[in-house]
Amino acid sequence: MLMTKERRPAIRTLRGWAIGVLQEAGAIRECEEHGWMQDRADPHARERAFDLARREPPPGVSPADAVAEVRDVLNSIGDTCPECPN
View 1 (cartoon, rainbow, N blue to C red):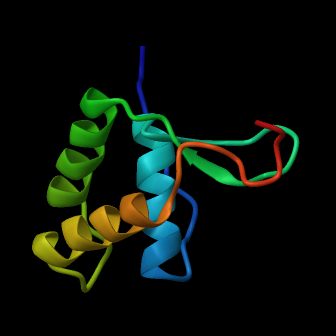
View 2: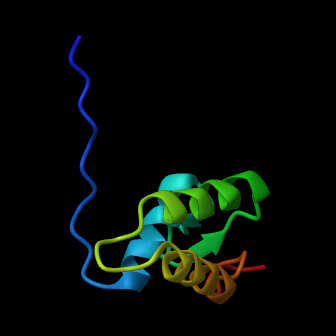
View 3: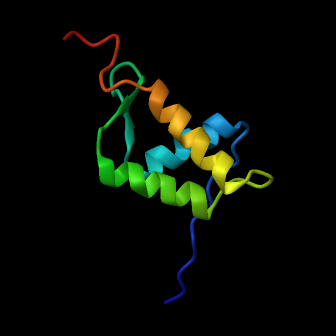
């Protein structure tokens, strides 16, 4: 059986690319009701995201800069939705 690798969609910004990597790795999720990104606090998923950033940075971006952007995005996302009741 022929297996093909699914192509990632074109990303316009480095931040958008990092969000996509974090979602692909399962490190963040979207609030189903409000759409806010939420940190899943899963250390294994975070490490998968950093590995992806190191191995497959976007064109023209160094692996170190890609990892730094993933880290910056993670640091900017909380673990709760600001609109959901506590």
